[in-house]
Length: 344
Ligand code: IPM
Ligand code: MN
Image 1 (cartoon, rainbow, N blue to C red):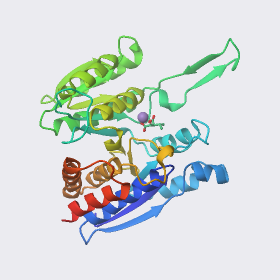
Image 2: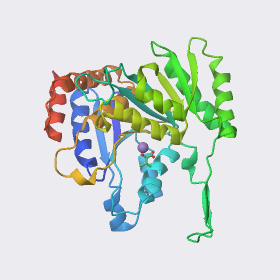
Image 3: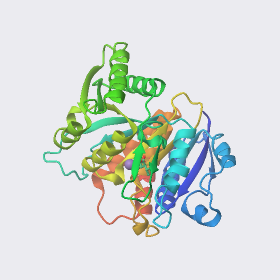
């Protein structure tokens, strides 16, 4: 497209600081003839305190008219746990059918890893984004008593599983190594596990060039920590994906570099791009947060909208910047350094 109509949700804590660096990089990488329009939405802790609202339907509808959404971070210790998560972040992912939660991991040069021998890390996790234990299908009986019973049921539909598994096969098929690993726990979660495994095996027959593998999630954490080079594309459910992508971030440069896209591949709704990290209220407003994860999320956004050369330019600029980066950088200095490289 020759224009990008972007919704921006800076959110809480360090969100506004990292988002403004992301937008700086976005506007400097775009060719002159691509017009960037942004509209900011005031959502998050401040709004909730002021009005009691998390995400009113009218605003959800407005957001739905944009081509994509850039989100900083949501959450603050002053808001009860779960209010903004469910009322805002998950509401967006569910309403806009972000069934592919794309989380790439790459070990860039000169970045830290706790792993010995600096293994080659270059894989992507395709985390299901609209089902699993995240749907809020549960309850509690005899709440607060010694006899309390709580359930939180994982929802897995054939429709929901096949669409994310198919997307993962497509992504694996488009990569040089063409390898896809299903991560689940089908030795214990037998019903959901069977649906995932059978769907995976059936769709796999349509992709003979893709080699496949299955790992239980506990074993997957061992390999992520001891041999991450074995992974190319991983597909998994919403909760397993949440957990293993934090581990993936920890071994590949830290959470400050982890980007993500909440993608609606069918393009019925805008996709939403956000750093994997949270709002880090302890360092909010200090100009010290690392905006790199947001900047890499902007690259995912551009790729999704069909601006591949610009996406690649940002990723190359980030790699080059990281290679020379010294410690003690401010948020804005990092943004400026990457802007200088993408505009050079
Ligand atoms: C993430 C976060 C969210 C999730 C929370 C904040 C709801 O941890 O994006 O990984 O669990 O998906
Ligand atoms: Mn998480």
